Length: 397
Ligand SMILES: *Cc1c(COP(=O)(O)O)cnc(C)c1O
Image 1 (cartoon, rainbow, N blue to C red):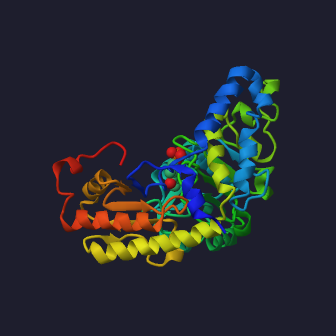
Image 2 (cartoon, protein in one colour):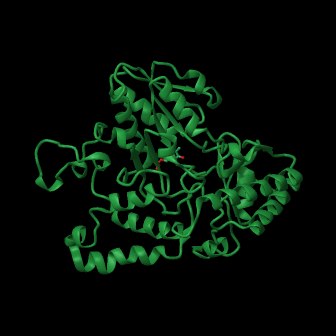
Image 3 (cartoon, rainbow, N blue to C red):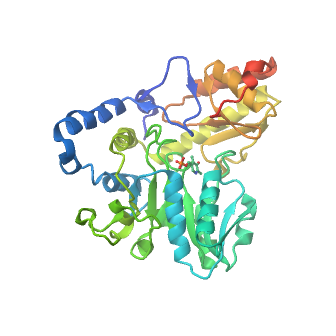
C-alpha cells in the first residue's frame, strides 16, 4: 500500500500553494538537488571525461530506460531515454511507417497534442507526401481504421480534456487491419497503470517532466516492441545510436534493438534529476495512485459543480474514461485561472476555454482539493476574475 503522507513529504511545495499543475510540470523532489549536485561534484569535478565510463553516464539512457520499462509494462532492454517527446514521436512514427510500405495514412485524432501532429506532417512531407496525416474526432478513430492506415498514432489521455482512449482495444483493432500503433504516454506515465506488452503496443514514447516530476527539460523515452526491435529503423542516425560510437566509422551501423533510438550525447544532469524523481516512484504502486486519483478527482468535480455553476465539466464524467486531470469550460477561463493562481491555486489554461487541473496523489491531498474548490468558488461567485490584469495573456499559459 502506498503511503501518500510519505510521498507528499518527498516534495518541496511552496508554503500556501495548492499545486494542481503537475500534469504540466511536476514539483521538485527533495532528493533531486543533491542527486544533481553529485553529478557535478564529485563526478564531473573529479572524473572529468572519465565520468562517461566511471560514473556510468554513457549507459544512463539505457539503465534509466530499464527503470522506466518496469513502470510501463515494457520488456527490459526495450526502452531508452533521451531527447524530447516530439523527437521520440518522430522516430517512432518514422520507424512504424517504414514497416508498413505501400500504406498511405497516419491516423490520429483532433484531440492530439499539436506537436505530435506537426511532427507527423513534417515527416510526411519529408517522405515526399506518399504518406498523409488524417485526423478524425477521438470517438471516430476506430471507424477510420482501414487497410490504407500504416500507423495509428494516438495520445492515450487527451492533454486538454483528460479523455482516455482504450489502448488495448484500439491496438487490437489497428492490428486487425494490419496497421501499427504509436502511443504517446505524456499524460499516462505516472498517472495511471500502463501495460505496453499486455496491450501488444508496437511503439510508445513519453515524457518525464509531467507526472513523473523529472524537472523542466527532463528527457523523454521511447519504447520499441521486441518483435520490431531488430528491424525497426531510426530516422535520426546519431552517433550514439551507432553500434560502436567510438569506432568513428564513416558509415552508420545501427546499434541493436532500442539502443539505435539513441541520438546524441545524453543530458546527464537532467537524467540525474529524473533519477531523483524515480527514487520516489520506487515506493509507489501505480494502482494505488490511480484509485486515489479517482477519489480526489470525484471530490473536486462534485465540489466545483456544487459551488461553481458557471463552469461546465470538460472531462468525461466516468472516471474510467479519464486520465488524472480534470477540465472545465469557461469562456473567461484564462482570466479565472489567473485569478485563482493569484490566490495560490495553480492550474493552467488551454485554449480556447479550458481550465485544467492535474490531480497528482503523490502530493495532492483532500485538504488541497477542498481548498482549491473554496478559492475557485470565491473567484466565480464574486466574479473576481473580471479585472484587466487577469486578461493579459502570457506566452506560457
Ligand atoms: C507535453 C506533450 C508533448 C511535449 O513534447 P516535448 O517535445 O517534450 O516538448 C508532446 N506530446 C504530448 C501529447 C504532450 O502532452
